[in-house]
Image (cartoon, rainbow, N blue to C red; front, side):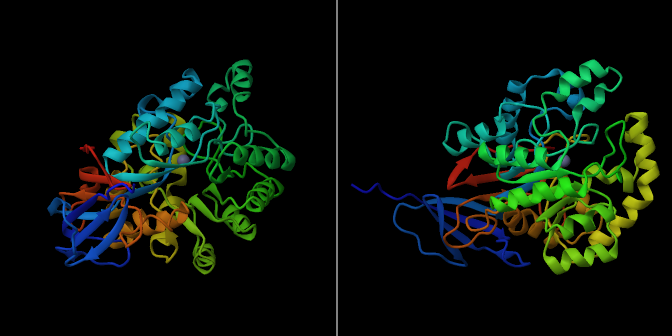
Length: 423
Ligand SMILES: [Zn+2]
């Protein structure tokens, strides 16, 4: 006997459906089980349809964050936890964060990896959520990124004053090493254990003590080995990158997209535009370099402050280039140093502060991110036939930069979950 279908009608005050730059007033969505059956000004409902009244809200597709690190829960002690917490803690952190994300209206998340072994906890969390054992956002996971010893991705760098301990710590990083063959093997193993994509750490960063944002910490051969191996197995590749020169190298190697891209020049932006390569600019976590807040900076380590000030002009210039370009932008938070990893709505506030037009941000959070995560066949827009991932917000995103910190309703795969606010 066929089971009876379940119908839900959502009455939307305003609907952003992800297909165009518009808010539809008083549209309705009919959901049949886990899929969207009809969308429009007036839809026809079968008998017994449950009505969900969101006429005082802005309704959007379930939001997507393309850059998170879910192995830690509290940013204030993250660097300490990276050393002192074990792999089981890190694995469980994925579940904790994924549930917080879902309850805050973010229904799909790309977990962009770590370097310290955690028993492939991200993959286990993804599967447990998919099989219904835990509430949580849908996870797209890359467990361990490819990086070299002493680079920004190598957490044993924090133990540099004690080489013995540092050497012990680096042994727990399965994809931290040197040489093209090492990385070919690393990528094959990652994919074997369920990685949805691969990532290379090719430049330094601000938060680590011994590298700089424009250091190139991988050779061209090493970058090529990762990209070629992953592409052979039909897996996309992204990169942690700041330097303009390094971005040019990665574009030559046919990389799918990049994270940060902060020191972008106009010539490089053109290559992104022409090739359709995406960029996840992670504006908020780097905002101190563009809009320094002396009070916040005073709480940071000396090396962090110094690097930030030194590279500030390049961050400011690069951000102008990125935001005035037509590069396909993704929305990613990378919250490891200023907010919790599930405070996804804070990035919206930052984009608005940097003068980005709301519809461009909305597109990044929905349609563009679904394409970046390669889930766009089923997600990212509210259209007939797609999975019913739907969120609603009481505050108006057109006028309120904190709108996406305050979720009023969330549905994933047609199921309704509790909501919570980040404010
Ligand atoms: Zn990151």
